[in-house]
Image (cartoon, rainbow, N blue to C red; front, side, top):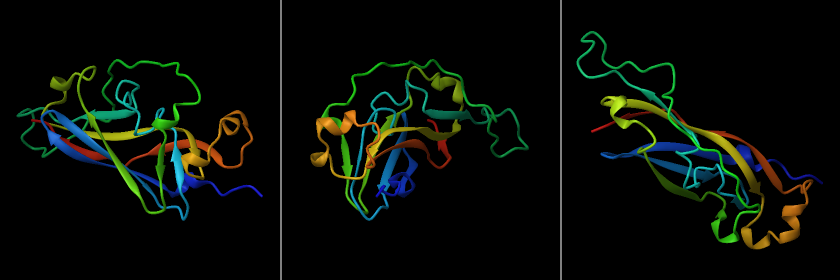
Length: 171
């Protein structure tokens, strides 16, 4: 019997960590009644998430240009250089993230080069969006080498994720 999709039970949210350098705290919470294991590639746990362009940044109003408006945000995300990666598959087992039922894990994303931070002004709106490359409906200890080769494995899922939009301050 096929397993129910655990992606709907994963919640990705962001909050602001610091203003200088501007830092986003991404939290992934497992709202499923079972453990899930997340492959880090392109997930919020990927150390190259910024460089891959998964953090969408909408510049805010520049200081002093419009006295009538309290805060306006560009409708177009900032265009900044990104990279495409080819990685070994499957990812190393020690990089997999397992979350038990109700557990959450956070990670920090520092907004830095290649983002032209000086072009952002004093505020911006950010949103994290990407692809779960591989989410398993079990702990990482129960995922064997043969499981990665089985493309029809009923316990492995992939799909899109998206966080809340967040207005951040930049010092």
